[in-house]
Image 1: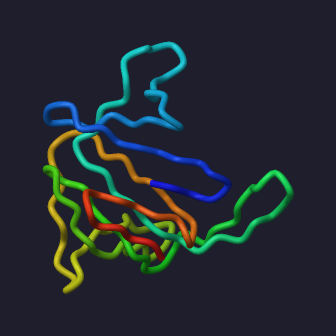
Image 2: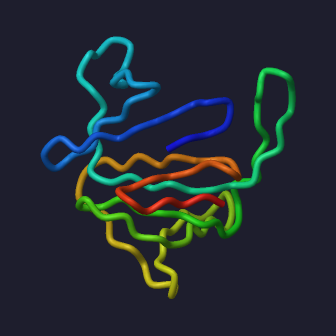
Length: 126
């Protein structure tokens, strides 16, 4: 996945889980050197407004947004539906049916408009 300002995130499949790398370095907690390992990855594109020279972003996270689920080695396009602060977001396919997630932890990667996701030969950008 690429964001803006040359920020790159990769997920590497290790067995049944994905490990997250930032600019080529495996990500882990400060006090735990074990790499993050998640069962599924959800990429969501949410329009953003740049607030300052540092690159802080403002996003309205409620609404319907394009999304891709990386699950069992496949990338499935869908929609992220987040109605508001008192309702859980849902991940649905392009017809509106819920997308099933694997048991385990899920990483939700929020990308601003223009960010890209590449999985094999497929590339998504919104």
